[in-house]
Length: 152
Picture 1 (spheres, one colour):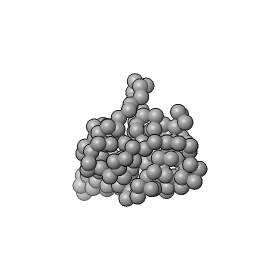
Picture 2: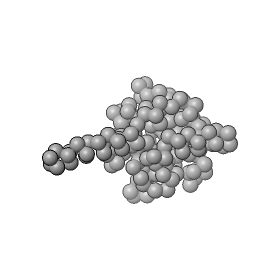
Picture 3: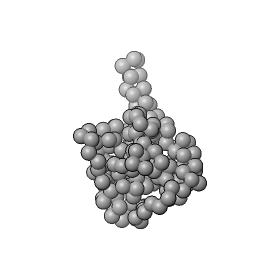
Picture 4: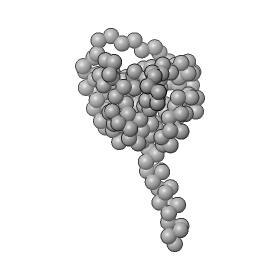
């Protein structure tokens, strides 16, 4: 009986925690930065096809983005530390805003088409769940992430 219970519990664990995977990025081991994003920004199957250019930080968007991040992302992501998924406090120093937008909006498609997303899945072994956010909500999260970046 116990021999049958262990695989069932393991599967239950995987399905339970599979809802919160790596949507951000793991820092490169060698300390270098990564400007990946070309694949996600030019893939016609991904929802975000624009180029983001930042001006002044928008405090209203930051507040909205922080609230969304707290509700939708903190189950799997922490600032400044590895958790179920990668830490995200400096994700915009490592990834393009367009890459982050597509990872938020379509992690299931990113993991199929983007080598960086595939590497994150291999590293964290838990796929990021699509939270079904709108582009405006994802943009608010990106604005919040701008304020957590060491380069901001």
